[in-house]
Image 1 (tube, rainbow, N blue to C red):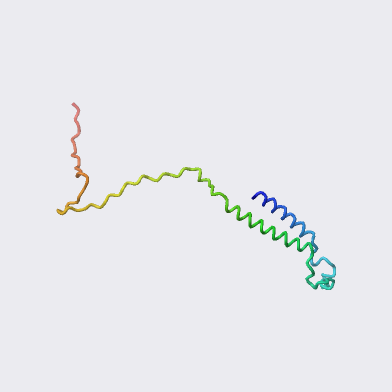
Image 2 (tube, one colour):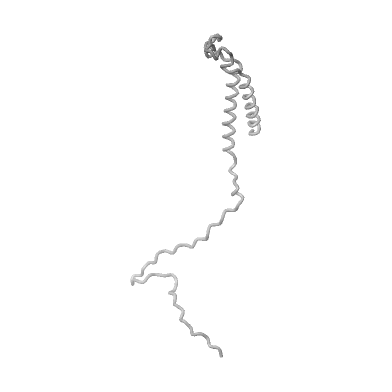
Length: 128
C-alpha cells in the first residue's frame, strides 16, 4: 500500500508542476501592467475559474492527502530497533536484605548466626 501511495504521490507532484507551468499569470497581458487587467474579464477583476485552476486545486488536495498519509504510515511502522537484536542485560543478583535485629528481653540482639570470633595471630613459622 505504501508503494502505491508513493507512486501516486510522485505522479500527482509531477502533474501539479506541469499544470502550474501551463497556466498564464495574472500579469500576462500587456494591458495588465497599465491597470487594464480587469477590464477584459467578463466575471470581474478576479476572473472566472478555469479548468486549469480547478485541476490545480484538485491536484493540490490529492498531493496534501498523500503527503499526510505517507507521513502517518511512516510513523506507524514496526517497532524494530538496532538494539532489539541485543539480549537484555541480566540484572545483578540481589542479596536479600536482612531484617532488622530484634532485641531479646535481656537487651542482646537476636541473631540467626553464631557470633564470629576473631582469629588469633600466629607466630611465624621458623625453619629447622
